[in-house]
Image (cartoon, rainbow, N blue to C red):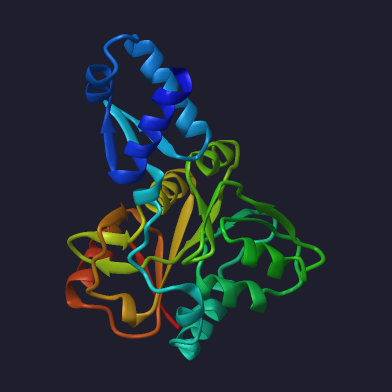
Amino acid sequence: MHSERRKIIKDMLHSKPFVSLNELVELFPDVSSMTIRRDIDYFEQQGEAIKVRGGARSMKFITTSMEEEFPSRMQKNIPAKEALAKKAIELLETGRSIFLDSGTTMMKMASLLPEDRLTITTTGPNIAIELLNKKQTLVNLVGGMLNRDNISVSGTQALRFLEDINIDIAFIVPSGADAQTGLTCGNYSECELKKMIVEKARKIIVLLDTSKLDKSLPYTFCALENISAIITNGTLPRDIEELAVKHDVQIIRA
């Protein structure tokens, strides 16, 4: 009965984004709500779900991204990515705990980093491997569920890993930026991770190429007024410029 119940719950998690505790209690009247909660804990440990208030969110739906796959993005806007990466490197501080986001712009930044004594944490396995070429750099790779589309790690395990990491400067690349919705991405699990990074970092530096402007994806991970600086390769929309001035956000032209 135990295995049969969990098989039914697993099928439910594979068929819809959210399964509520109440519907599971009604579906299995012969077991207690505490037993159902343990079932949810089990599926969270298996990477099948994330426990939330009132039930569980299915990882099958959470990890679906609305963004292009990494290889196709790698070939786009190459000069802009290089310009942003070079300008970001100027803001590095030796002896600080640095976070590098995942993505193609961060991959370019990792490849251009100078040989220096840096401590870098990243959610990108490919970025971590690139950083191994820097003999003086200490690299922390976040563990968790790997997203094939953007080669980044997120999920519950990643959040737990980051709880123990201090971050001085975080270099973040959003998938979209808009004055109303802020910095956005197309993956719920990645959004939760970026939110934690934003909360922990002393300084948040956003690398923003013009292709991301006036583009709003489903999940907001940071308001524009909460960042320290924007590095951009073009002219920002007037409403973003005004927000930056109002909240002392530095604008750096690449």
